Image (cartoon, rainbow, N blue to C red; front, top):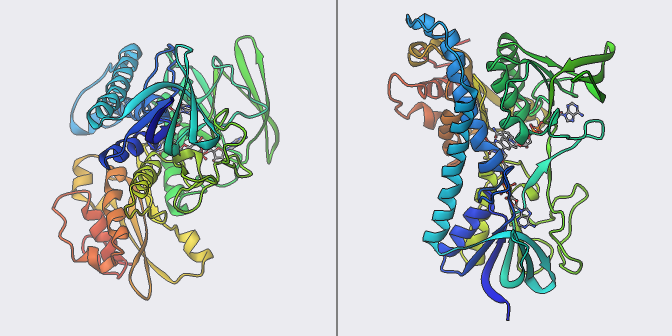
Length: 475
Ligand code: FAD
Ligand code: NAD
């Protein structure tokens, strides 16, 4: 008789592991099966985010930002730091150690919550039975009343740029380089391209970023994008827009990346290429014939608004379903599904999902952009407050960027908040909370913000929506 559980979760990334923990908190018996294998062959929980995404990238962004600040900001503080050098091996050891601690933490959380962890590849058979091939090759079968698919995503491979993981690399390879490539080409000026481009640029690489679209950071508010482009240019990121990559040629140890732009055929010769042209949902070998689960035309597992897949008591969450590919989106979907399975009320507000790009300056937003409001014909008012007028930002030698708040002209409800500047990724939490509670700009105007803090910029941007900013000239 196969082991029978209340809930089986396939995938222990940031969508799967919170599902498993919440289901166990709800008093259900839970198994979570995960197939992740590190480059050294070891198994680890945490999925892309902890092993090859959010956490290792932020570790390297933090380390390299310190290098950059030592080189560019310390002098202004009167700190002489000539001769700052980087020991990449130590930096990478720190990154790996943070990842190990965090992934080990999930194993401990599972143990404490009573979740059974299985290290192996799962395949959904008809009737909510699951075939598991463990990492040691052993085959077994289990069954569950509910199955939650959280199989995540993988990097998109371009036909003209096949990964060889040596010269043509994916984002995971790029987090583990053991030497600084003198010349680097990043394909895609999206979130990964900007974050990893920044890491290696700060460590000394000449970085060319090729972006197919004509406008920079098309997903962001374009006032924010324009400010960001200015800073990246100053930092030496050579971002080339409207660049359509046609192929690569490896010659004499270099990779020649051929592309066309509005000036015609171009070529850039580099030592390594990072392809960061998006990610695609991953469901390879996940679904046996007769499982009843269908995929949409883009390969995402089809789900309804509550993450129910097309077969009874089968659910799917995270990167393998529609919506932004963000760890916190998957986490909330997983928690909601675990609560729904337990018969409780659950809610995911897809309109209020914050986005953060962890570059310097940081970029963060929640809600709608000015372009989206214009396209939808929504009447809005805008308040902008520059960090140049923030005492705390000045004290931090980080007085760049701004907070921009968009609020409905009639009801004053906050419709979007867009931040570029110091700690934008932390500051956006206040705006997210305000929007989740459907706050008005006046609500934030009347909320006391400690002085001197960066958060005062949000207070002032709220005041600026009514041209009542105190610390900046109202225009
Ligand atoms: P994943 O994290 O991909 O986890 C899926 C898991 O399922 C994996 O362990 C996989 O091995 C396992 N699996 C798949 N199929 C099977 C199977 N058949 N049997 C068993 N196990 C299986 N997002 C953010 O919000 N913030 C960030 O700062 C951020 N930074 C990123 C940086 C990089 C470089 C990258 C690549 C991504 C980043 N992301 C970030 C995106 C984030 O990593 C994903 O949105 C998130 O990991 C998705 O979570 P998930 O659980 O859906 O999938
Ligand atoms: P992305 O969608 O953010 O950016 C991909 C970029 O590549 C786009 O600008 C696209 O126009 C461009 N592109 C696509 N094909 C191209 C081609 N052939 N030539 C040149 N440019 C091309 O995707 P990503 O940066 O790969 O990130 C994948 C996912 O991971 C995203 O959904 C993102 O949300 C998530 N992620 C999030 C964070 C974060 O939250 N800080 C960090 C990293 C990744």
